[in-house]
Image (cartoon, rainbow, N blue to C red; front, side, top):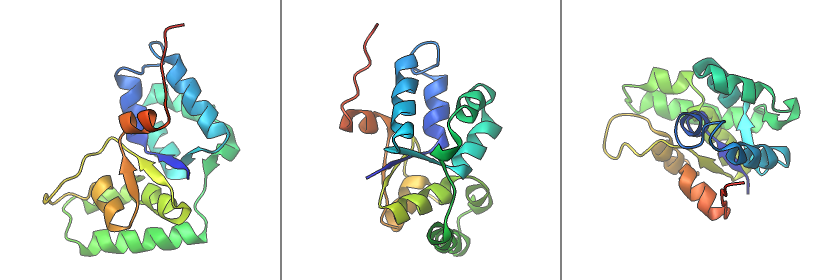
Length: 159
């Protein structure tokens, strides 16, 4: 089962305790997992990461081209179903949700039977479309970065 990385996981990691200069081992861990396709980045996450964070854009651009996953017909169909749900669900942030990578990453994970790794938290009964809520609606498990690292037994040690 693959882990699909949301752009917020990368952006938040770079901006907090896992900055490139502070925790290079974290980024090496991600690169290794991306290289052997245990961790996946969809094209929409690449595009979003590059557009939001300049420093992160260099890291994302340096990933091998074959490690960025493009949506196939199954993913496009799944995305269409998710987009219809967002449009019909009365979410006030639907335009923002649909313009970003969130729907795509959920669609990829649904088709792949993978897990989304995201820093978003549920909106609960709130009106916004959030990755954990929409993932749950479509049978996709969503976990946060800390659980992802714990589940994989990651240990960051001082070298």
